[in-house]
Length: 296
Image 1 (spheres, one colour):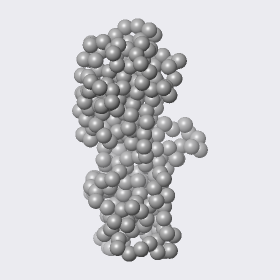
Image 2 (cartoon, helix red, strand yellow):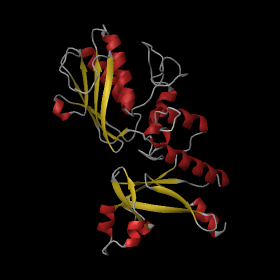
Image 3 (cartoon, one colour):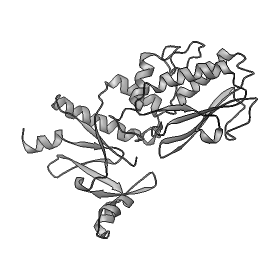
Image 4 (spheres, helix red, strand yellow):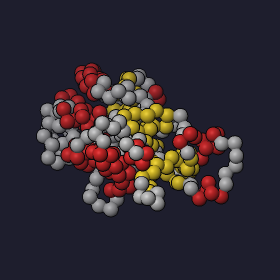
């Protein structure tokens, strides 16, 4: 294999800061950007006019073009391959696609810190017990997540409450029969509130079903889809017998898989997979990788 082909097959996909470009010969090159604050820690010299010409603004951060020897601390992980049909389904739910001009700028939402769940006063012991079992078994599917249950609301980042309870999230529309509201910072979810009208959902079974459904949606701000089996948690179809299907589990696991970029926009997501598949097709035995800086 000649040098140019070797370079193509050894491309590193940098999480969130990967940029595509071509040199004069049409060969792909990789540019590495790091935060301005990190650049200052790594470089003893002052910024030059040339440095400032290569600034990139992303999510209110100023990024500076650097070489790979100045790459920040992080971990390199094997790229996770999925076929086009799966990627299409994943994109629709995780990016909440509407098939309009806003799609390319949409980003995914995900948890990075452990989930700490607080139950309000009116939630019954049986609902708490059954939800704990469900939530733990679901989070156990995801290597990078953990969950705990706390007694004090100030220790929590997930609050579950009924219509009879204190209104823990004033921005939630309680005119609905159920809803969830989340806070995030640069795509990372920091807080989730789940509200259920316990008059409309008149039995513990119905309340538990609705809490489970909203909890799954709150793991990634997922959009419900048409065409899924009615008992799927990713289906728009209303059912009292929801269960995590194999496809549901695969979608959740992929969303938190470090073999993809986290919090990237849809345009970048498409471009990365298109390039990765092209390279893998040319060299099926190649080991593609993503780089994840520790500060993300």
